[in-house]
Structures are given as structure tokens and as C-alpha cells.
Amino acid sequence: MKASARISLLTMLNMVVWACGVPLGHAAPTIALSPDSRVDLRSAYATTQELAEGKQLAEASCARCHGLNGISTTEGVPHIAGQRPAYLHFEMRVYQSGGRDNKPMTDAVKFLSDDALMKVAAYYGSLDPAPVTAAGPRRKAAPDRPDPIATGKAAAAGCAGCHGETGVSKIPGMPSVVGFDPKYFIAAISAYKRGERKHDMMKTLVSALKDADVKNMALFYALQKPDRAKTPAPGNKEAGKKAAASCSGCHGEGGVSTSPATPSIAGQDGQYFVAAMRAYKNGSRTNQSMKGPASATDDNILADLAAYYASQQPKAPKVAKPLSIAEWAQRCDRCHGINGNSTDLRTPALAGQRVDYLIRVLRAYQKGGRKSKEMNFMTDVLTDADVEGLGEHYARQTARSVVYVLVPPR
Image (cartoon, rainbow, N blue to C red; front, side, top):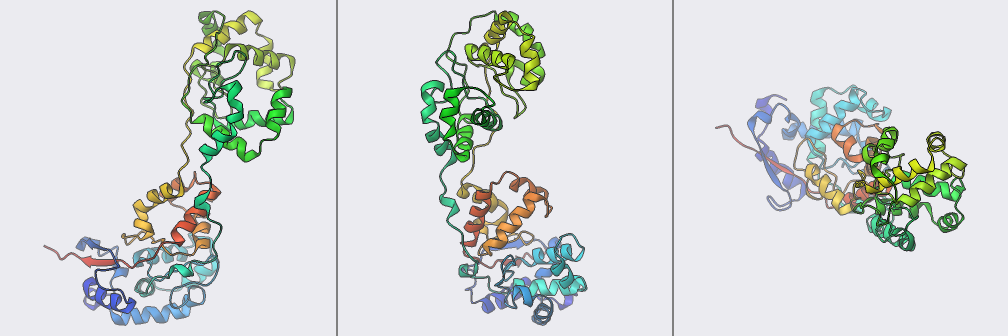
């Protein structure tokens, strides 16, 4: 598009707002762009003729899947009406170059010129966004799922009598369960369930726990403030410190592990520590990496090791507190706009989008099918429930057009 053929964004604004039935300055947020943004934002400039040409191109190449009105009726196919035009232009170029594994989209755009892509992007960007009712089949309300920490605390209530309310033992012989990475805690409970750790009472107590309960308990204990067991630890801790040199390779300096699969033993109850080492010795606990060191350590040294580790300060594992859907949405809104209504030409609007499409795209970022440093990082820690909850959240938001006003040069 030649600069002389373009109308100003302010002029286009009146045309688009009129076409969408949106009162000027009422429903659509406004931002200003500096003149040096023009090169990157060419698809935001269009004449009435170019919009008409964009509609013709859309009818030939896009309407079969996205609809001529940009409102999809097909599962997994996004609405593109009212989408930010520079984002649409960029995405079509990605498909055109084969950057996405989507043959129908690649075939649809591969022979279109860049000028044609911009006209299509401008046409769909000028349309009234999809209503919330077009967001596709809904799932059950994922945002109302129980808080995993509260659920974990409730599941752990029966453990408090032995292990303490927050997992810090006050009974000699009973282990503290704070300071463990959730992966280790889950593995240990599973070992009791399977009988790989021979302890009849523990096997009975944990056999009725569901996997979800164990996972939530692990999270609850991992997020508690770590402290040393409130129990005596007979032994020479200075001698134990010397003997512990060979243990630090796996269990970390001072017994604070840096591996999710290896337990931290800092602050652990001394009597339990000795009992566990003896269990590795006699085979009632099966662990090949521990059997050798335990067998080579006599009872006096075990007592010294127990005293040393009991005196060390445990540290909380690097575990983040899970966010609610509302908290996740606040983070997403930083880039995608309040309630998913982006005010950045290059960032897609999410409000009112098909829920199945939103979920599919989030999972594609998680698995690496879509490449974006920011999005791959953000989605890496999302659970399935988080993904579905975010999809539902944004599908329920009202989509709004955005008005872009060009700031004249000084």
C-alpha cells in the first residue's frame, strides 16, 4: 500500500466504529502510536477500497474456515473478527513460511502476496468481534476447583498426631516431613503403598489416600516454614560433620538437597534418621544407592551423623504456590490487555475467543509446537486445570475493538 493511498487511522477509525456499531470513544479503548511505528504497523492502515479487496481475498481464502464475518463455527478454529490486524498479518506470514505445522493454513496463505495479507488482516481487524455466545462448547467451571493447599492441609490432618501440624516432628522416632520436594514426598508415600518401604502402620494409613490427596499433601508440606525437629539427638555432632562429607554429594551441604529426587535431611529427627539407615542396611528399605553407604557405617557413626543433621537448619524447597485462575489471568492481562482485550497491535486479543482454540494453543506452547520465549515460559508450569480454567475465563470475556490514533509528527 502506498502512503498516498492510505487514509489516516483517525479517518479509518470513524469508518470502522460506524461499521461495528460502536459509539466513538465509548466501548473501545484508545492508544496512541508514534509515526516511526508505521513500517511495522502497515496492516493497520487501509482505505475503503483496500478493505473491500481484503474482503474479496478473505472470501476466497479464509471464509471456509473462519467465516466471512470472522466468527468461527468450527472446533479448534479461532475467531478472527476484530483481532489486532498487525498480529493477524504476522501470524499469516508465519504460516506462509511453514513456521507452524498446519497444512490447511499454510496452503490457504502460501500464494498470497504481502500486500494481500495486509488487506486481509485489515479487513478482519475492522469487523465487529465475536460475541461471548460464540465461544464454543463450555466445560465445567474449572475456576471453582478446590484450593490445592487447603485440600492438602485437610488431607494431612490425620498425620499431625505423629508428624506435627506443619510437618515438624515433636516425637522421637517420627520424621519431620517439611523441607522435602513434593516429588520426593510423593515417591516416598508410593513406596509405602507398594510395600517397598516395609512399615505396616504407614502402609495401612496411606493405602486409602488417592493420588490427588498425596499430591496436595506434598504441596502443603513443601510450603510450610521449615524448622528443626523438636526432639533430642544424642551423638557427637562435630564427629558427625566429618562423617557427613561423603553424604553431601547427594544430600547437599548441611543436608539441604538440591535434587527433587533426593531428600533433604537437615533438621531431621535423629532417632528416625538412625532407624532409616538401619532399614537400608537390613533391606527393609530398597535403595541401591543407600544400601552400600548404610552397610559401611556403624551405629556410633550413625548416631553422630544423626546429631549433626538434626542440628542443621532445613530450607524450604523451591516450590511456587499455585495461582488461582484469577491470579493467572492478571499475569496474562499484562500483555493481552484487561480481560484479554489487547491494546497492542502485535499482541492478540483473547476475549471472546473460542474456548477449544484457546486451550489448544496453550497446550501447543507447553509442548513446543508454538515457539515464543515468553509464552513457552509462562505455560510451562500450567496444570491441565489451569489451561482449561484460563480458556474458560477468556472465552467468557466481552471482546472489544481497539481504536488506534496516530500521533502527528512534531
